[in-house]
Image 1 (cartoon, rainbow, N blue to C red):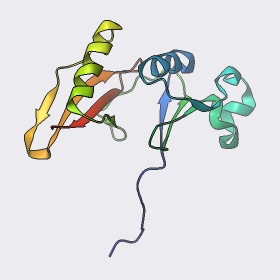
Image 2 (tube, rainbow, N blue to C red; image 1 turned 90 degrees about the vertical axis):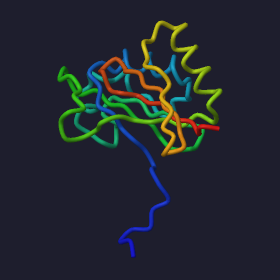
Image 3 (cartoon, rainbow, N blue to C red; image 1 turned 180 degrees about the horizontal axis):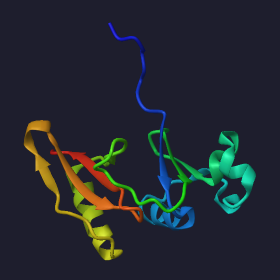
Length: 143
């Protein structure tokens, strides 16, 4: 028996080096509504040290209702080879949506990998990097 009965993720928060740059990137890629945005106060000491002030970050609400959060932390570059986050994966509804996303990213000048079909897992993925080199993945059913 599990110790905790959880229905899934409530939110993910990334630490980023430049909140304005990251916010512009995620606004362009996903266009989700920002439900909280304290990025304009990023240099305020009260924002940097206080969780209830959201650390000078931005919180988006995804169509699933989960939250995607970012907060600025400084100049250390992300490295997926160290303990912590490896990547974040966002769902798209179909393989056709994945193909459309690849075309839209290309048109916007955002470099991305090829769509990879993972037959055994029953899904396909498309990867690209955010401004801090965090791997972002889009995932669809193979269908």
